[in-house]
Image (tube, helix red, strand yellow):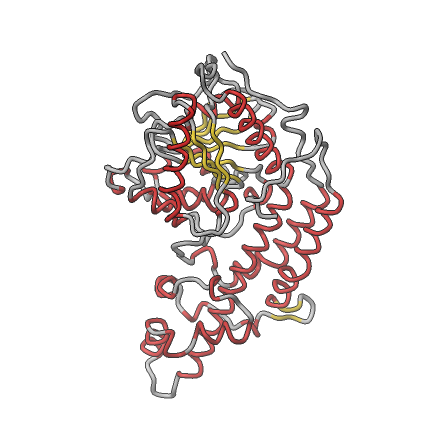
Length: 435
């Protein structure tokens, strides 16, 4: 039986400055949250970008590692291996048939216990409370597993149902793509696991890659069960994997691929044992790097979230301004606003935002999202941005712009300069990871 390859300090403590976390929470609650509430950002339905407000639990949560891939490729076995659970009563169930039908969140706890999805969603202190919006059908397929483990003190693992290409999505009983999107948006690292016999690309896998657009730096491809092949066949499968993935990943740099067998059985004879061990060490270093960069990733997440909230507020303000400009003495207010919402291009709603506020067109939400948004949020429920100013508190727009442009970058810079965790020699240079 093989034990997990370890470094001198494989998983050092995450050096998170309490002062920096307090500063981050303060910036969020004073500069971003008021704008979220004023313009009901959490009610904006978007297809590619999560529309939920960032909760306290999300800001303070541990890094999340998400395991995706076809059924029976070794996702659960890999988690068991990383946590040393094989042969114990706590190990995740594995098998040759599709065995994981739930989303399993493996996290730290004082003792081993299972937590029902309904309980996880009801606990506002956890980062999983927003999952309640996906309905009871999904919550019945969500389960938490708590256990005392040094690694889980610093990271959370999420095991997902395997991709089964011949099953219709609606048969799952919950919005599979939307749930995956929620986890993808919050994952610090995404392990996309394959085995040599399951390299086919179908509709569900293509959809997952579309959902991971913009997250390429967090994707790691895992070619698992590599010792089941001869060296020659392994080279062919490695090439076939890139051939299958190439049309789905539109970036200049390919994602990092780890080739090994992540389970405790000894490697098969006459296979690349040394290569597999080095790959294992590299993967551990990669995981370690995510843990060390936890606070930086949180700051970047909140800044990105602030940018989206600001764009949403600017768009709602522009819709309102256009509405007031077009509303005449004898106009029907409902018809005027409905015409603007149905055809915003006629009134240059989105183009005017790009021209006046230096917003990237790639950050703009879908126009259809605002048809849904104003369908449930009447225009009378909003004030223009100029009305959200006071002598004592200043203007909401100025606060969020200051946070996004100055305060959060300054906080990130101070963390990068001052935080250095213990290492064990030179860290591997990972050109696939966004700095």
